[in-house]
Length: 117
Figure 1: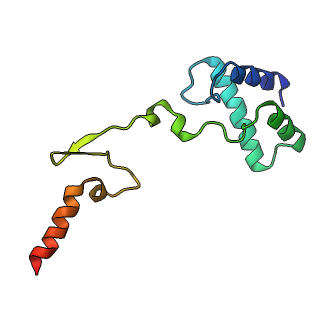
Figure 2: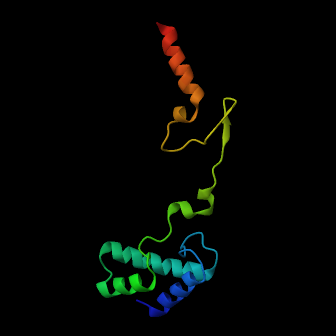
Figure 3: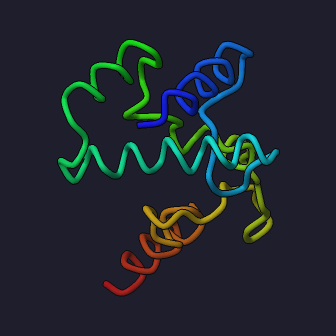
C-alpha cells in the first residue's frame, strides 16, 4: 500500500471534500485518489487486502469501505415533476409501475370495473 497515497487521501478528506471519485471527478487529484481507494475497496471485497492494511485504513480514514452513498451525487438530489394527464405527478421510477405514478389510471380502472357489472 502506498503510504503517500494514504496521506494524500487523509489530507483530501480533511480539506472538507467528500470521498474521491474515479468517475465523474472534478480534478486530477480526485481521480488519482478515487482510483486508489476504489482499488483498496476492490481488494478488500476479494479478500486480498491484509489485516494490517485494513487497520491502517480504518485508523486513518474511517468509513473508507463505504465511501459515498448513491444519493450523494448532485443529480440524485433533484426531483423532477412532470405533468401526466393534466395533473402533476412524480416521474416514473423503475420501482413503480407507470400506473402507480398516475392516480387517474387507478381511478379509471376502478370505475371501469364497476361499469362492467
